Length: 130
Image (cartoon, rainbow, N blue to C red; front, side, top):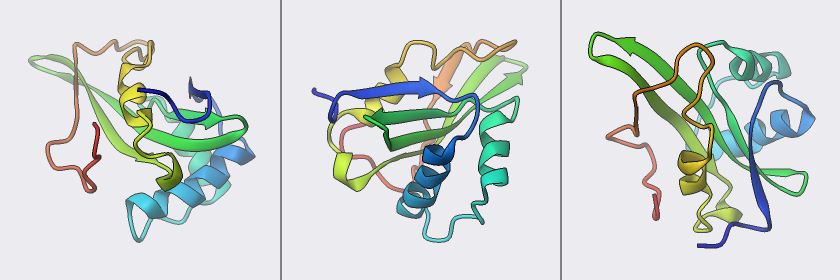
């Protein structure tokens, strides 16, 4: 499976203009009525201590977002939930969603390494290859 145009997947530590633009462009592909996406809101999601946000970039363009990897401490152990994965329509089918899950470090969250990762049982939009 070949990634779309030399895609690089990074863990975000802040939200630059390209990330804010990507939220505006990609979230409506996931949810018809996304929340108001101000730069401040996007930055708060990216920098929230319990979140890990990944971006897939093809050159300078963000073509996919794994918006939150939420780590939970449960009585049965530490677990991680992948939420709000969206890949640009033009880049779908190139393995970007799978690359998010398989990216080294995607399961590493400071202070809380997950014991397992869960994909929501009822995704809002079914990914054809994930």
